[in-house]
Amino acid sequence: MTAAIVFVHGLYMTGAEAVFLRRRLGRDLGARTHVFAYTATAEDPDRVADRLASRVAGLMAIPVAEGRPGDVHLVGHSFGGLLILRAIERAARRGAPLPPGRVVLLGSPVSGSGAAAALMRRPVLGRALGRSGAVLARAGFAGASIAGNGHDVGVIAGCRPMGLGRHFAHFHEPNDGTVAVRETQLAGAVDRIVLPVSHTGMLLSRRVALEAACFLRQGRFSLTASS
Image 1 (spheres, one colour):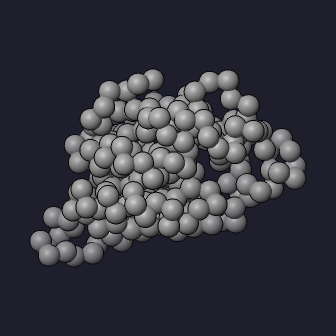
Image 2 (cartoon, rainbow, N blue to C red):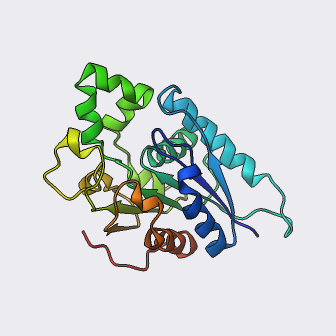
């Protein structure tokens, strides 16, 4: 069987910024990699999540040399991780849960983004978030329900405070420059680590790629949670 990895990019990104991460994951796992593209500011998040679920289901239907496909793993950066969790939850509620696979969240503010909430309080700046703003500011996911639908979730957070978000959220706690470490905590995640990377820098980090590959392969990170 050949596994597939779907990468879901973050706000204002396209997936091209994660080319090195995707290449490393594909090589380390011998997997096919795919980018799920969307426009966070213009599209309805629920419709995007449903489209993502359809994409995953479609990949399971693609035959491979061994005769049947392997698992479809999901890797989401920032807002992309929220869309993954939303897709899993909504598919389960429809009675058509996504096929089993592991999930790695990279700097995703699953408990709500303080930086986004601060922007939302400023009408002009808040418009820059478009239709993603409300989801980013509130988020909130039932991690147990995610795990209960056959998806082990691993969380990678960054603690290098380099990013524009720190100018709006005024962090007084460990953060990656855009998202606080605390905001990445997901109840029900099977493993979690904090690495010295920034919010965007984690996409270029060899250590992040190695740890993400490790989790997708065996359901655990090689490092012990540092925070």
